[in-house]
Image (tube, rainbow, N blue to C red; front, side, top):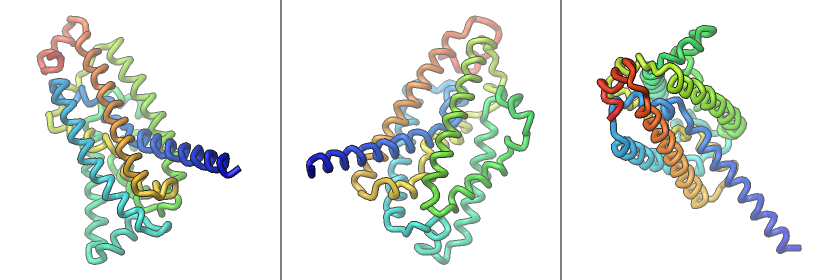
Amino acid sequence: MSASKSAWTLLQESSVHRHVFFLILGTAIGAGMMTLPLVTQGLSLSVLTLVLAVSAVIMYLAAQLWIELSLSAPPDSNLATFVRQWASSLEYPTHLAYLAFFWSLMACYLSTMPTFLAPYLTFAPWLNHPVMYSIALSIFLYVPKKFQGLMNQIFVLAMICVLGLIFTLTTYEIQHDWRFPELTQYPKISILAPLMMFFGYHLTIPSFPSFVSNKKELEKICMTGTAAIFILYWVWCTLLLSALSAVPATSSATNLSDNGFLE
């Protein structure tokens, strides 16, 4: 009986670990992943891979710090209480810095979104404003971490739906229209915005201890999740670069080549 209980316990723990792994994977999905080859303006696959790898390492190390913080915090903690507990004199400057960061990040990120998404937002143009995203991220950060598990599940479902929509629209543009007028509008610095959104699972980390409380297990989960995200993005970028290289020799393709996308 004890052996079966032990096996069942291990099975339950394994299932929970897989849930956290997919939580990391799902919340890291962003529109930036889909459009990276379009906004980098001619970066080769090797350079793109290097950029992805460096970003993954940096964000993984940041995730480790979040884990340390979350494991030592009470269940009702959120970003506000984190700052108040460990840096009380910097509480209000930290809040202002986060809001400013969200504003600049969302403004930059939205400026790099492909123009072919714009017609699909005509029913609610305010959705494309950085204020909306800044408010959403701020609310998410200041929710007590004991409620973040449910919010994470909703967030994952929403991001999967967005991923499917963007994939469908992007594929249609590549296969049918071959028109990317937005490619000539963004400088190479625009790569920073989607890259900052790439490994965006950090907002979900404070809820991880509600699934797994062992630090070593959490480190393994974050390492595995980051590796899976890196592979996913690399495969997508490779496929999209291959699709772009197969663009027919039309005037649109000539424009792409002139801008360094068909190297």
